[in-house]
Image (cartoon, rainbow, N blue to C red; front, side, top):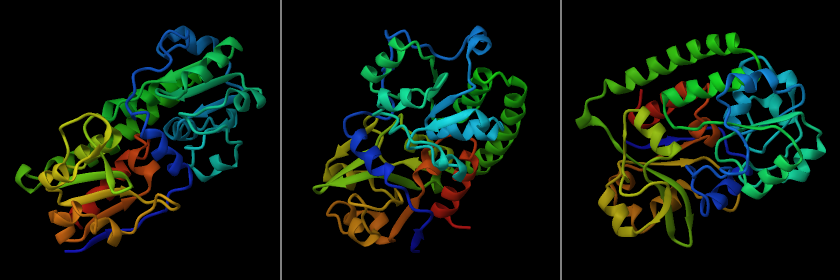
Length: 309
């Protein structure tokens, strides 16, 4: 059965995301280690941090700030912060993995809250030398990681009670979506290949320890590639051997976009069960891979796109 899922198109920032991922894995070692930039875990941090003029780095962090009702503190955001729509009206300080310290300092913030993995380290060093508080929010691609983000952001903003309420709502929604997915028998779980990009005939796909791997598993499916960690170029032989039932990609526009027809004509993909059934699922990248307050919705949408119903 043909399964085309055409959802909201990705904005141009995802072109930059793909290019940067080719040299920076989405699950990097902490790039700010040794720079004196703190992880946001200590209670005293929340007591001393002035967030009256806040820059948020990471679409998930920005979504949490809005979900907590604390958006009045925000004066700028990074280019991945596209939800809610109101966030796009804020000044854009650049892509989270290619930050310009000059652009951030120009908006005169009192603090920055960024998802773990933001950088580059050189930019963070400049911000540290400017005595600008730069707090990181830990990133893991699972249920507990989402709830931890909410807890940390709430503590940094000085609204732990609000965070506790939001955690409860998000946890209940996540648990319901995950439990529904978990009911699917192992024998019926489809193999999903997440394709990040196709450059010069080379497919870059997701292995383990990525946002794509995390969302596939939460949806009650199987990542077709498990022989490596991160996002890497894979050989034709590896794709054929993976036998994906479904190809999952971010819906995007621009030079890196590819139609379903062209994707399924790729030599290796054309020999897979996914090509036989024309099973391509496209989803908004931030919704799919954000691991924020809306992830339960992403799980349900992906589940419906893969399995129908």
